[in-house]
Length: 119
Figure 1 (cartoon, rainbow, N blue to C red):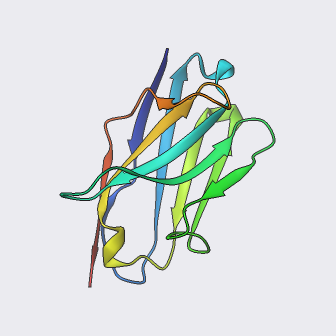
Figure 2 (cartoon, rainbow, N blue to C red):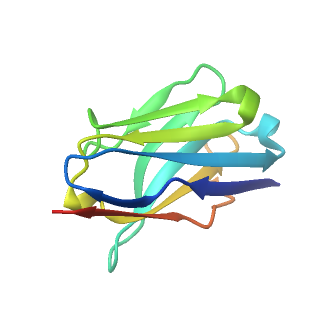
């Protein structure tokens, strides 16, 4: 079982930056990758980015590619999401989750952190 705690959300003006953190505890050594997702009011939860614990291979949603950067610190069991050039449409609750194997669904969701981008 993996426990996840997100932090770093807040209110920022369009064009600004935020860095989210996701601290993982528990059986993190057995997981394959970590991902960030977001859910805006009235919308479905959507994938944002993913990074593997080994090798640091990354994947991004087209909507954030070139603006967001996912990274990890294996020693701290923490994954980050650096968000630059934020847009009002990035406003959402951001969640991190763990992917235990390359074919598994994401799970062990954190409580989420609110990101609000004002125009």
